[in-house]
Length: 123
Image (cartoon, rainbow, N blue to C red; front, side, top):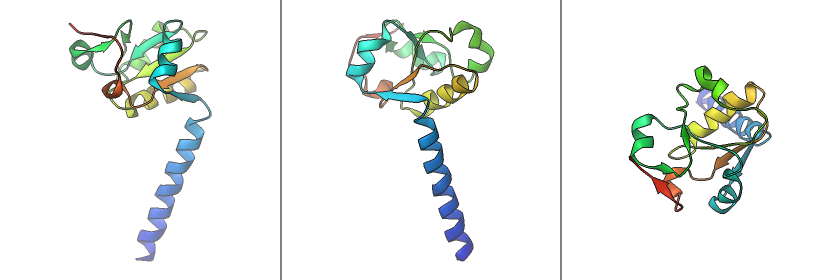
């Protein structure tokens, strides 16, 4: 029983640490804040191509998080990067990868595409 309590405390501690570390390099924006800045930035949808084709934010490029490491050359480090996925977990992983590779101005859409009410394009 004691082991389970210790394991639970360690897991919660790791989660809290990751959350606060992520907040040092990733800015989470409301839809209104996201709309204000994404046209002057690199807007990247990190979902898989079939999800992107079903609907994406107008002007977004599709660079799936699963391909991001190989496609870093497509993302300029000197311009802000606006990221989104369906929810927020994949865009957070993408931001972590970008941060490790020296990208500084990273922004994430709060709630992801499923909460988006703005303009959408689909194939």
